[in-house]
Length: 324
Image: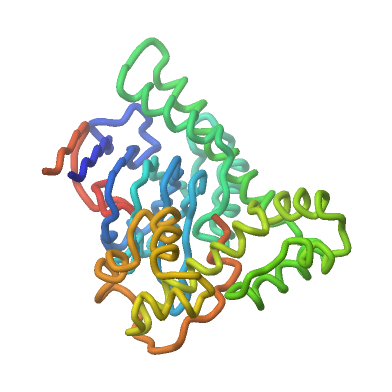
């Protein structure tokens, strides 16, 4: 039984902060195909994925946002899309329109325009976010639900913290560099992800001791070597399920799994669906290509229905396809 909770507030009637276009939260317990619509001509959507994941095909490549990811939809961008799958997740969002000729309330004109330019320069649609964003979004929604003394001032302070935190998170990711030893180890795993790989051999490739290698690899990639290999296999499996007519058993053996049962168990643990269910829900929603499963880009790894409504329901929300 699928359960969905959707909470949304939209200006001008329902929002405490007049500078926001909309604010909301979406929770779903089952995977679903995303909705597709163009955003407004000048509205930016900032989302935070507390749990679950969202994946979509960007041209020929598979991308996936994992828990604690920031999701960015630039003004006028196509959000989510019919090629998106929203796995069971909890997601917050807000939409804001940066003015061209004046300041956002509580900020100077210079800071407003600087923030606007910074968001416009983003080259990623998602990236790892600070867990503090969950608390900021939750408090912002709570302030919206329960209007109290100085609710607008509190909401504005929370909104500004969200903007600054997201900008700092992006700046941190943009400055992150993979060291040559970890890059060499990662390349070794990418070239042999279908095979059984000994971590000792990979650490030897990096030149680090086993313990220190684990520490540095996790710090720089956000995954352990074993998790990195497993994600490579799963992403390659997704591509094979969508792009080819190979049987699930053949895909499992091709990717180095000892049996289709073990593959299905591993796939469901990470994806939340069996391979067969994933292929079925993806039917007609992935790019047409008959290529064989290949190693995915590292970018792909960077991390009866009930409904509760508040506010006014007007248009499909970003990645979720719910209303925002």
